[in-house]
Length: 179
Image (cartoon, rainbow, N blue to C red):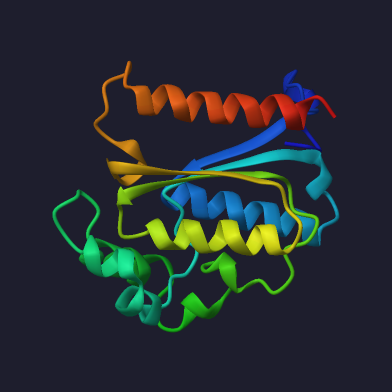
């Protein structure tokens, strides 16, 4: 996008990446790859909802959110294992492109919005990634939505939680795009 967006008459100045679930993982990976390629500054904001960042079987067996929300809330622990086996078979989960939390240095990544829901097996992944980004000096806006399921699925369009989510993203965009 940064290199060719203008060819399609796109405004390439305020680039934001947004993803839900596996798409949130891709946002984290793309931002990290952009840093390696020296173009992370072109990304003004990353927005991640329902973020899987640690695909290790050990995480799935020890994380409180995986145990508490193993089934009954749309996304199950079993479906997470299926996704892992499909996306990162064998020990590919050890690659930061499958488990972006494994990247050692997260300095100079774009600011991030991270959304977590109480009843989500991946809740703790998002919380851990937000904390690690902060440790490396990355500006993070994160929100934990109590009483909600993965990615805030099923809420009516006028739900207070969705308005709060929108306001958080808009606030982050205003701060990041005004620079």
